[in-house]
Amino acid sequence: MAGALGRSETVGEREGVPMKKLPYTPNSQIRSALRNLTLRSRERSAAIKRDKYTCQVCGRKQSKAKGKEFKVEVHHKAGIPNWAAIFEAIRKYLLIHPDEQITLCKKCHEEMEET
Image (cartoon, rainbow, N blue to C red):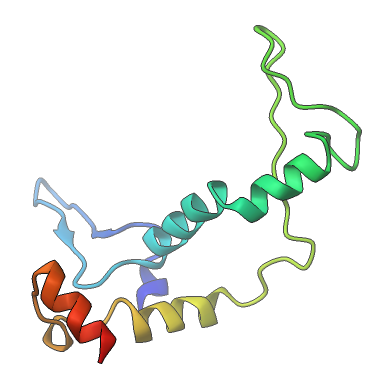
């Protein structure tokens, strides 16, 4: 479904015809949102601090010095083996069809969540 269009969140533009938005959130947008979440996560921060802001392969340390800027990143040792399952769960439980959603005020939403 979403994977067939790859990274684009719009369907092509030909001969000046405006691009049309997809009727669903594309996988590329979901992946980007999850990446942004992990970039600000406590788990990521804890791993970087544990390793003293140092690359565990080459030993190079993160630097903010002008002209010598160098950033370290966090790598999942086991990788992320099943993006398809992650996308499926997000679509099943979070990005559901509009017919399965209603608009509520904050108070009513909190009350519904409690039941």
